[in-house]
Image 1: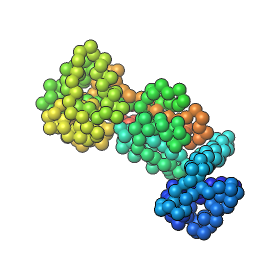
Image 2: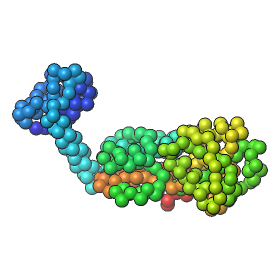
Image 3: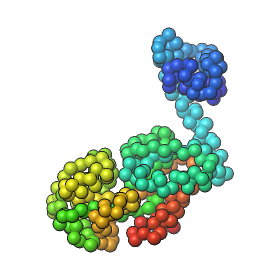
Image 4: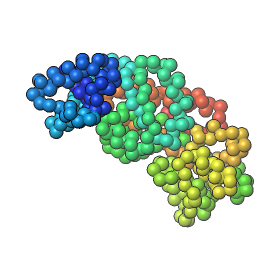
Length: 308
């Protein structure tokens, strides 16, 4: 039994076709078929139902492929241990980023990181917080960037920065004449918020609950751009994370109002499993993000706090 045989077997199980699996593995179809057959002969079982289209797994084949995934994942972990001990910054790294962070943060650091660490193969996916937690717990992700704290005992949270909330208040909204906003000013004001499933929605709701008085929240949307358009149409005001405001045009920026100090903010952290061995990449990625952010906002009048 070899790791190559296990990889070929998993490839067939994934696509249900020997020819396509061979293409994905960059080998000829006879070579792949022969290796899978050798594994079946060694184990004295049949892993695939070859008469079905697409090819399916037998009952024992299901168990074999499940164990093969574990074995191949442990192989990766052995390499990670070696890289970790040597402090080597290279290899694959699967990163999940929440939707309210990815569009504004990724363009700031990605190009810089790739140039600085060309041997790291970043695979980035936009995921909500629940999916990131699940991915980390199941070993499908190596790291995540999300709003914290999450109070998950299996994860380590490394704060990257604290992002202030900014009010977007077009005229003739009653608060548009204010130079600075206080949390108490939001009492009884209808606020456009993101739809359920976005952690930034929860931050806004929690912020407004600091007042004893009741609030009402109007239309919901899945994007900040939609909330801004609705606000411009006189549907109310909304709250934005600071990095989201940097890309606004000049006219829209005139509708921004900042909170009085201390500004409410959200904590954005790098998440990773306590059992992970890719610490050199995690540390390099975290340091790169913090450094790039400090440089990007150096001359901006905002209190975007990053660790030093």
